[in-house]
Image (cartoon, rainbow, N blue to C red):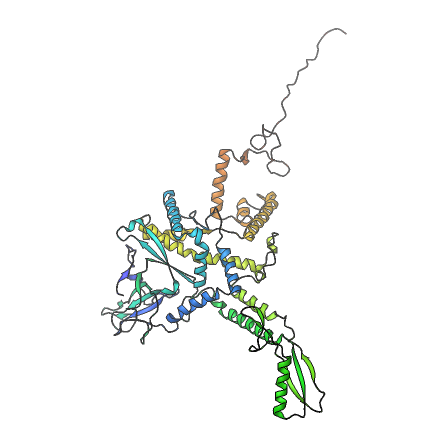
Amino acid sequence: MARLFGFSIDDNEKQPPGLISPVPPNNQDGSENYVSSGFFGSYVDIEGIYKNENDLIRRYRSMSLYPECDSAIEDIVNEAIVADTNDSPVEIELSNLNASDGIKKKIREEFRFILDLLDFDTKAHEIFRNWYIDGRLYYNKVIDQKNPSEGIKELRYIDASKMRFIRQIVKKKGDGAFIKQEQPNQYDFPQIEEYFVYTEGQKKTGYGTQASSNGVKLTRDSVCYCTSGLVDRNKGSTLSWLHKSIKPLNQLMMIEDSLVIYRLSRAPERRIFYIDVGNLPKVKAEQYLRDVMTRYRNKLVYDANTGEVRDDKKFMSMMEDFWLPRREGGRGTEITTLPGGQNLGEITDINYFQKKLYRSLNVPETRIQGEGGFSLGRSSEILRDEIKFSKFVGRMRKRFSHMFQDLLKTQLILKNIVTPEDWELMSDHIQYDFLYDNHFAELKEAELTTERINLATLAEPYVGKFYSNDYIRRKILRQTDQEIIEQDALIEKEIKDGIIPDPSQMAIDPMTGQPIPPQPGDTSGGLMGATPQAPEVEEKKFETPTGGEI
């Protein structure tokens, strides 16, 4: 397994020698540390990490088949991935990216191409569900080795149980992390190599798992790797979002099984037959008791496999009765009844563990029954659990977007659209918008906008007296610097185009100091012109008569 399969994207500018550290990279990405030294070659400490990770994945997958757990997972996946006939579940957002329109157009085209390779519009629900359950997601990036500039040709899904991310530390000499050289303050740091190991199955040996014979090594850049972000800090293994639900789910299953056993054993009423055997000897008394049992015993039995009621003495009935002999001098033959178990309809403990399971999955408890409809009232009527759930889904979407980030990086660099250095500067400004189906978000945004506009309307008479326009926009309307710049530019453009009136040309009310809205049918003034004035009437001059006779 010395050969590495796949391709690598080399950075033109290597890491400067001054930026080295004796501390190896952390394993927050779920990698496993190999150490290459010694007689036995490459080895890995697999105790509690390597051999248990596949067991964890298998346990996660079996948990997802449990009805209550599956219902909670479906709630989460349906909130995160919204399927729509016309719109894509996710779109790329480049408004914050400082690049030319041509580069943005190419980035959007390549992102659309990646979604087509994944068939994301159709398989988005399945992809997100696999990532949520397994806690990791692998895709092999297949390219044309002879012509890599054509980009990714195919994306092949890899089962999480067959892949491992390895970080190999190659020591040169000595046992320490770094070796001091002849010159003072000069150290020789170990070389770190990252790759993936693909195996069809695990092979256990007496010396553990040998890296030289276990699977195929794939380069770091040839595999898309996306994890849940949850890491067991004690063992270093990657965890799934289902990990903290293991104990509540096991408790719920045991409680349900014990409840079924108790009800099956305690539910039926049993009869007690006291048979008078007189003064018969012991052997004859037992024979007489068996004859009576055979004569009156309930011979009808229920077959649970076929659902039939049959007359078969070979099977014990669930309604098995008790037959007790009674000697002479007693009350003779008597039949009494033992009552069944009490409080068989009590399921308070079941409800408790169901709620505990949902809390461990970060799903609101109100969704267990599914009876209550969603309120379309004010956002204040929405439960706080729904708010927490919405934020939880948003965090998962952010983490899941790392898959798009990795694939897009590879595609853009292979096609020479951007360089690795440019990508490092651009990646933080590329965002991914998922399609929302949460009506609460719309209600919340609409209510907040309404309240802010109402406050701004109330404060409008005091603008220029107690408050400035900038204060109103920043503190009440909560506009950011970028939004203020954008809105000012749009307002200026719309005034120039005649879409909205120019405030400087509007008539002012002398009482309030506010612009006067135009009157219906007013075309001569108002908003777009000067205040209409009354027409001037030419005054006639009357001459005073002078002279004359009376």
